[in-house]
Structure formats: C-alpha cells, structure tokens
Image (cartoon, rainbow, N blue to C red; front, side, top):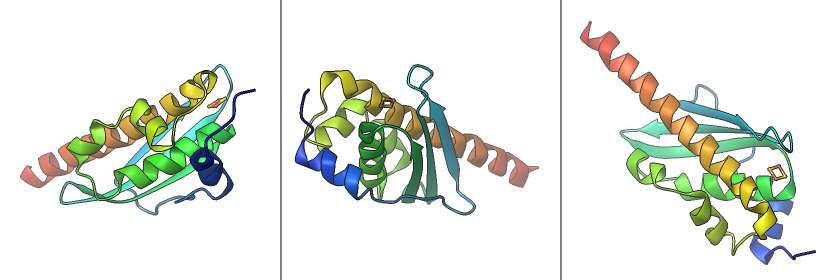
Length: 132
Ligand code: FES
C-alpha cells in the first residue's frame, strides 16, 4: 500500500472549514458514481473575491483531505484565479497523492468548478434583475 503524505494525513485527521455556509453565493455538489463518494462545496464571494469556503464530504480520506485543502486554497482568491485551480494543484499542495487516489482530487476540482459556475449564474441573474 502506498503511504499518504503527512499533509494528507493532517488534513484528513483535522480537516479545515468543515460545514455549510448560510446563504452561500455558490454551491457545488458532485459525486463519483464509481466509489459513491459525495462532496459539497460552499463559497462566499464579495467583490469578485472568495471570502469564505466550507465543505461537506462523505467520502474516503483522500476526498476529505482534498476538499479541506481546496477550501484553504480558494480563500482570498478571485473567482478567475480559483477557476484555474486544478486537481493536480490541490494534490501537489497536499504533498502528492498515491496514483490510485488522484480521482479523489478530481472530485474537489469538480466541486469547486460547480460552485464557481453556480456563483456566476447567480450573479448574472442578479445583475439582469437589477437592470430590469
Ligand atoms: Fe471516492 Fe476517494 S475513493 S473519492
């Protein structure tokens, strides 16, 4: 069995930003049909900058560690910067993942992208409502 890095173990044992955000500006819910793991990511955005991020993950240790890391990585980033965060960047920030666990980091990237999409759709709607 391949070992996990210290950082993965740390984020798995004491994940950061667990929970839900009330009235989030964006929510991303994704699941992996193969393993059945589910991840939910919430973001708060102010003036185009992500001010808060929280997650709920029902999944394996690597899924929990990558969601924890992704919430840390996106904070204080602009929406554009956050869109560029790839699953590899998340895995790298964790000191790497065993190859068979890379798909778990894909879940984190997808959840983030979905939350950002949700935010953009909402803000488009809001500005068109304001204009109307
Ligand atoms: Fe499902 Fe890791 S095994 S996300």
